[in-house]
Structures are given as structure tokens and as C-alpha cells.
Image (tube, rainbow, N blue to C red):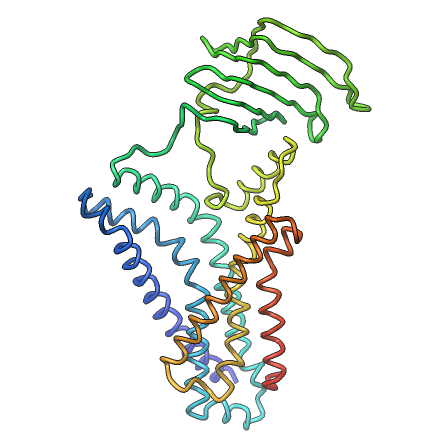
Length: 361
């Protein structure tokens, strides 16, 4: 039994890494030709270009892992089926499902690896790649924006800013909401038409200060002012920083960011969908592996070419389902978690039904 399982593992691992390498090369070549005019016009140094593509690679690895997994199971099991080896395993009294157990565990390992790469490597690599691409195009890295308008800022210490505009060291139309520690109840609200930063001190002009009761949330004091000073810990640099794209954040950072947004009373539905998607997508490797088992064993793949096109078709359907699910989740039709996991749920049900039909269990 162990010898058979080792043989099955070897037959799967080799095409998996071959497919992964092939699709990575395809992604690199496609990306190069998509932006070839930029690379030829700007003529960046070869080492810069190499570092740029190196930083793009982790995200591409996560993207193509499901396709490589599906191709590997179609190629390996399809070949074993065509040569009668699957039939021989079944004839010897060994359960096909039991023989495939190590491959299922490998697919779970692939999913966990994808999750780990997506959390630890992809966020920082994507940021570096985006900065390098701006340099290649002759621009400065997007570290700051000194003319932002209508934005919010989640600060440390249970505080949330709404700002109409920032220009140099001046905030216009500022509203600062402070919450009681560990709650979503407002403790105070400060508004100011203009807020100027000078010598480490904020000067607030033409505004109001309102404080609330910790018990019932009712207003307990209200004050209008023409000018006051405040030692808020934030500086203009905090507000000038361009907010990171939620897609580029790691799970933990995005979770913290989402909670801060929710404390500020803003909608976090899109962030919640992306948050759950960061967990659900890596596990598509396992789901798509299970789907590939009955496909490969139903008479075996007639050829590697057929397996290749079937893998691409299923992958496009899967990615399409993920996109639709996310759009429905952001639109509020489904709960963010259900929306993010919908493609996995649908394809898992289809996979189990196909395995039942193929009498694999």
C-alpha cells in the first residue's frame, strides 16, 4: 500500500511543479509584452527589471497554483487510468480513495502554502513591485499625496478622522470622533473648519467640541470655539500617506483596518469580502484537486492537450465564479463570508457529486 501511495505521489508532484513553472513563465512573458512599450521607452536597468519581476512572482505563484494543481491531477491520474494502473489498484482490493489519501493531504499542504505566501510574502512584494513600476515609468513611488480630498483616517487609540481636504500642513473640514476604549460608543466629537499644524501643535479654528456620557451615550457638554490648541499625536505626514489598497494588505493588517473602519461608522462590506477571500482562495487548490479526481478517472484524459484545455476551462469558470461571488457580496446580496466562499462551496458540491457518480467512494 505504501509503495502504491509513493508511486501516486511521485506521479502527481512532478507535473505539478512542471505546470507551476510553465504558467509562471507564461505570466512573466504575458506581462512583459503587455508593458513592452513602457520598458522599451524608459529602458530601465536590467537589474531593476529583474527585481521588479521577482517581486511580482509571489502573487503570480498564488494565482496559478490552482491551475497547476488541476493539471497535475488530470495528467497523473489520467495517465494511470489510460495505462490500466488505476484498474489494477482497484482489482487488488485497495480502495481508490484510500490510495489517493496522500494526494489529498498534498493538496491541503498546497493550500496552506498558498495561504502562508499570500499572508507573509505577497503584500510587501506587491508594494515593492508597484513602487518599482512607478520608477520604471519615470515617476516617484507613491509614498505621499499632499492634496487628498474627502477621506477618512483610522488613528490609534480609538480615534477616527474625517477630512474634506489636506493641503500642506492644513486640514480643512476636519471631524475627529473618539470612542470609549474597546467600544463603538462615541466619547467625544471635535469639528473644525480649519486645522493648522505648527511646531508640533495643532491649532483648530471655528469648530465645536461635544462630549458624550459613557452610560447612555447622551451629550453631556457642548462648546463652540474660534481658536484652540491641541496636542493630537498625528502629524500632516499621517494624513498625507496614501492608504494601502485592501487587496495588497495581509490578513491581519486588513482585519485591523476593517475594525477601525467599522468603529468609524463606515461601511466595511467590501473589506470584509476581501478579508474572507484571502482565506477562501488558497483553499481552492484542495477543492479543485477533488474536482480533478473524477474528471481524470472517467475514462482517463485522452491526451495531455485535452487535459490542458479542460484545466483552463475549469479554472476560468472558477475564477469567474469567484468574481461574481465577490461582486454579490460587495453589493450586499450575500453575507461577505458566504460570498467569498460561494465558489468553493459550489465546486465542492459538484466535485463530491461527480465522485459519487464515479463510485470513488
